Image 1: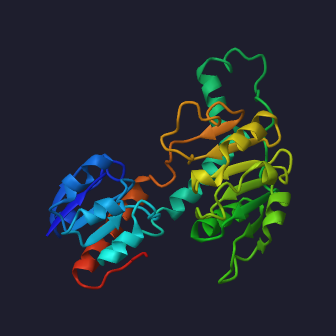
Image 2 (image 1 turned 90 degrees about the vertical axis):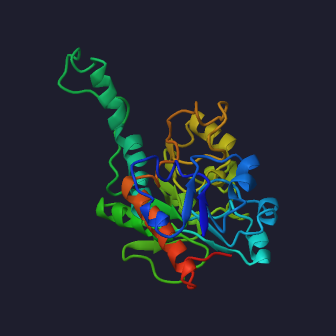
Length: 317
């Protein structure tokens, strides 16, 4: 049984082990695979793993031996699911591996926006404190989160993890999701979408990307937000109309944004958010803690093991 990992580098740049996969199949690993090389690299394989390399319908039709596609991520939009189903190919993802890491990143971004720790540390390195006449200084207002309202758009596992941290910090938490299959944590108030926009001092995005949520952060909805509110996005870049958000930041309509995802990754050099006022952008790292990546590889390996045993798990489509 042959297996190839088409883009192994981001999940494991060398600090983790693929030994579990080696025990299950004859493995080949590629750091990255351009679209033009997918078929060539996978043509002899019954199993392939991908993170962001697209497995198109054309590629699926050109790989007659292919029986299994494992996605090294939770989102599986890189795979043409309809084409895989038509061929009877099993597709599996890895849900929930990065929940704690993403929730932590939400607050890493928010705390930098509100207390600017990194910025102030840099001013000390540059000699500003040594040259200061006073024992203390700060740039701009420092914002206390306790007592402020955190609005969560998309209350799933990550939204709930974010809520736990916010409640522990003394924040009021409101949340919106399309349908509620269970009650939220005690202390979390269910609200409609409009109320979430209107009443949040901090709005954090955890919606899946769908036709209904694409571009949900736009000029119209930004206008509903509190002046001085903060926006955090660790979910999907296309949830935001980037030109509209850049305008809101540059005009001071909202106080700041912390973004770990953008509509195109890596972004174009002229993306309007890169130069926008008080906009922190990190390079899609919320999922990438060592612990989260270790879980990712472990579950992806267990998915392969389960498939080979005839009891596939974490199937999608």
